[in-house]
Amino acid sequence: MAEVKIGTTVSRFDLSSILAQFRLIPENGHRFPDYKAGQYVALRRENCRLTKRVILPDGKITYVPDVDERGNQKRGPVTHSYSISSAPHETAEHGWLEFYIILETYEDGKPGRLTESLFQLDPTEDNKVYYFTKIAGDFTLERRTKGFRNVVFVGTGTGLAPFASMVKQLHYEALHGKASDVRYTLIHANRGAAELGYHDRLLEIEKAGRIDFLYVPSISRPSATETADQTLARGRANNLLRSIFDLPMKEQEDLMNVQELGDDPIRSQAILDRAVRPSLPAHIPKSLLLDRMDPKNTVILTCGNPLAMADIGHIAATTGTKFEKEVW
Image (tube, rainbow, N blue to C red):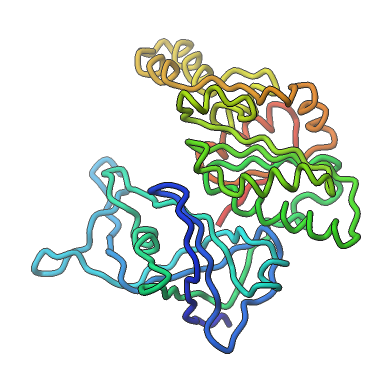
């Protein structure tokens, strides 16, 4: 049975105001369990703003502040599982687990219960995080990619975390004599270049050539400077994958469906007009990616935004490609 221990945050690197990488060491006298790249662990903080589940008259579920008799929002423990972004060899060598976490927000703009508390962490003062001693999950290369020549990772936002762990571990194993003829392709999209977690490390691994690895970083809300950067792709991860297979953008497909139903297309047209058109980095031709994504020999793994993952699943089904996604 899993126990609860008190870990200590030893470093925090902010990529933006809402995105950070945290390193956590175990309770004194203990070590983290062995794990495989792609697995997750449950974390907890004690002083979180609590909410309660409410069913609205139309049946929609929402969450509202859980307040006491004085109208003050209650505080208490909140637990959530996070994919581990460190590689197993890093934990074995340094002792820490690393996480790539976004400050979640609800529809009303208020921050998520646990992530708000995590983003208040200060490695020099408020640095304690509870963790469960069980590391779990079957979103691993062994379970999800066995027998495939081509493995395509598609990460949206912090959905990169399990893939960062996998790629770093594959590189490490190759350095230590474990050869593989599998081709790995990683598509990762985030809002801006600063939020592309592990970008420099992934470029280093690609350049080293110890594994057959192609990295496609994409910006979904590019600035003028980022638009001019030909080393970056543009567009959301699902739309970039659609463009590789010559499929219409998700927003275009939604508009076509609305028009076919005879519904008012104004809103769908406005969404399409705001969408960033997908484009590949200048040095990566579409033909190269298509060769690495032959449906007969390819499995697509995805993690991240649920809507994006659903669309990536649709793309896989449309092209006849094996599909796997991370689910809690």
